[in-house]
Image 1 (cartoon, helix red, strand yellow):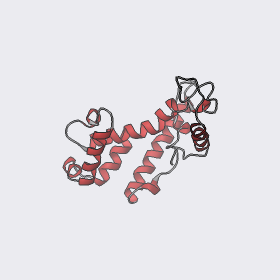
Image 2 (cartoon, rainbow, N blue to C red):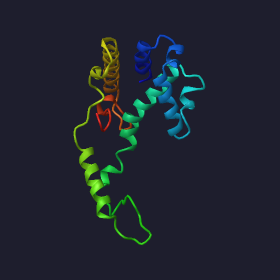
Image 3 (cartoon, one colour):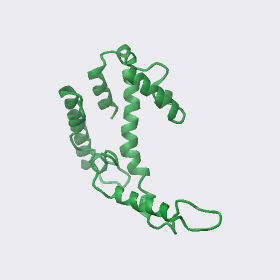
Image 4 (cartoon, rainbow, N blue to C red):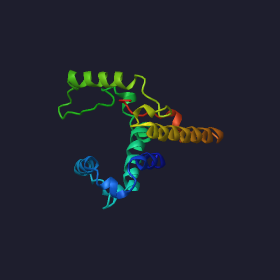
Length: 170
């Protein structure tokens, strides 16, 4: 994920200075640093570089795929059983209001629709042909990782690219 992010960013930023000169990137980084708990400096350091931004972008990719798969599915498996695993617990013991239950029903529908698998060609998102090739290279690397995992003995704890989805909006 980091190699893909770095490869893609390197297509558009020939140097760390060129990246730092991009006002849109600077504004985005300032907004992220204000809104992300703890800021972004743990991943980017004090001076933004192509490598440090790639580390941050790779963290977002990981969070939206692997962590979502590992951490995000537990509650949703039981979301319709609000009497067993409520999303809100009132001191009075009352049940969730109908609007809360309806939001859970809506979210359940949303989560059970087909979502974009991580193992697909995302080249259509690229800015140009070079970017599309960077996405194609990322897919080749994921395919290679998938083949290596499939060649190993199976284990329930393994998370392979084939089971990951890009995100709920993809």
